Image (cartoon, rainbow, N blue to C red; front, top):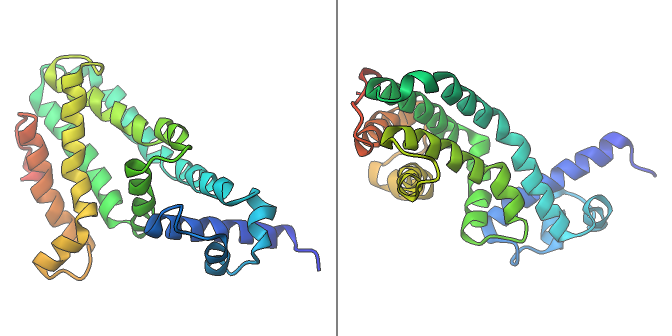
Length: 224
């Protein structure tokens, strides 16, 4: 029986979801095509049919992530561009914008169930870049880094090309990323079973003022 277009589409999507999980958990080299097909509930030949092989499936996962992130980045870029005229020399406005950007990111990064599946793959690609890293970097992490560096550069009264601003941005990102990387440690230390919305808010109330103080900005009332 010839599969219908919907069945073909469903199989392709299932393979991408399976690859997102397995590549994120075990890394590219450790995952076999048999394991990918089994996780997706598909025939082994389906990987070749839909993608042409394991490497092309890995690239398809990256393309899938690139489709997921832009709306969040678009929002942040628009907000920064809109508020840029009033930010320079205005620490209160800078602090308020940092609170908005950080809160929006943290609620998505820590509280979204789909994001929890994405992060392991994302981090593996950061730590062990594949041949597709340049493509991924330009669309997601590089774009995010540049956006945040523009904000930090305004705070530091310099340009986004200044290495000091780039390094400071990297340090800020590290303060955020550790909450996802170190999730098992934090859950063990606090006795939390999960990052519920209420617990994400607790993290935000601690982390956002820390980010503001790191940049020498006043702590906003909303963050205190």
